[in-house]
Amino acid sequence: MDHFEIRNGEMFAENVPLATIAAEVGTPVYVYSHSTLQRHAQVFRDALSALPRKHLAFAVKSNPNLSVLSVLRDEGYGADVVSEGEMKRALAAGIPASDIVFSGVGKSRRELAAALDAGIGQFNIESEEEGVELAEIARDKGGHAVATLRVNPDVDAGTHAKISTGKAENKFGVAYHDAAEIYARLSACEGLNLRGLAVHIGSQISDLAPSRAAFEKMGELMRQLRSAGHSVTHMDLGGGLGVPYRLGETLPGPDDYGAMVAEVTRDWDATIMFEPGRVITGNSGVLITEVIRVKPGVSAPFVVVDAAMNDLARPSLYDAWHDFLAVRPRGEMMEAHIVGPICESSDTFAKNRTIDVVEAGDLAVFRTAGAYGATMANTYNSRALVPEVMVKGDKWAVVADRIEPETIFAAERLPDWLS
Ligand SMILES: *Cc1c(COP(=O)(O)O)cnc(C)c1O
Image 1 (cartoon, rainbow, N blue to C red):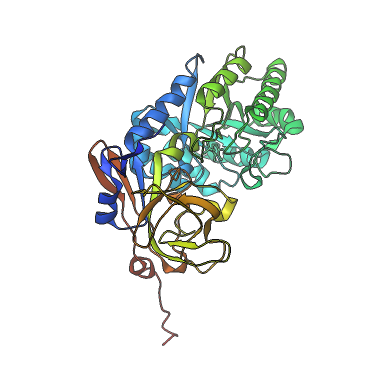
Image 2: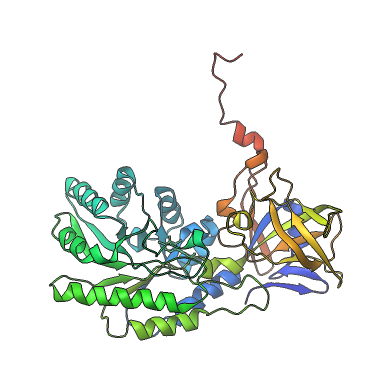
């Protein structure tokens, strides 16, 4: 459920007409619903209420906007970060360092040191080499790093290849069959407090069977480690739960996921950790765009909109589907291709799609744009960096400015040997 609905013939975000935001901020613009974010955070947490000990860390990479982070902080979420920049954002949003988990396959020495200085709660290390390096840095600082070992369970998440992370050939984690030995060696490292295992098999997961299989394998490994005398108190199950991108589509939801996790982990006697991203933010945001013009095409007309692949990259990266809805629907449908202005054929949001009839000057939205939307935006074709707005009830505010090309090229320098 979300709070983007048609009322009296036009789409609102909570109690604010999207047309008002478009008129004042311009388009394209992302709009987030505060109530939807809050609700998703609560629904996910409530779905895990059967677990005696848990920790929730919001995956910052899905939407790192400071206002979004502060909503999640108020809901009691920590943060899962994958770079020093994300760590700085989480800290700036007031998320306690001790509730931050640092994930990622390429944490640099500098990032490891900065995270130790900040007092990060847990490092999810992805190789023996990283663990040794982290232990060394922590020892030099006269302390120790709290960590889990990320394991690659060799399970196919059944999602798009570019967002699958848990197969043996993927770069993430250590190989399942090597994990016990690596855990044993790293446990002996002074400077490292290795307290558990981590797993994350992919994103936009629409079938719970692969997750269950991965978690069961992790449970096996946990028991094996314990019987070899190692301490395993924390089990991080990652994120990845999918969301419906098409109106009417049904996917396993947080309740199904929670029930599965409760069953698999019932005798684990560990703190179970989660890193949800998309399931919290995905349907909490839309991207408003204006139709520039409609031009004839061979099989259907092209609806050329002012948003492009630089603003919302998912269709060009993953062939992702985003529903396209008119802000003031006329009640008639047309078949069209939806494209942006960028000079690449991959700047295509949809082909031969049945959509609301739109004309030049009409406003429309791409739904389910709250996750991996604004955060992946760039300025290709010297377009502005897209702004973000948050709505709460009848209040709204710009929570990230549009960054104009002049601001971007102000950081460029002409060397004195160029006239
Ligand atoms: C991306 C990522 C997540 C979040 O994934 P979602 O599909 O957005 O829930 C969680 N953990 C790790 C390690 C990730 O890389």
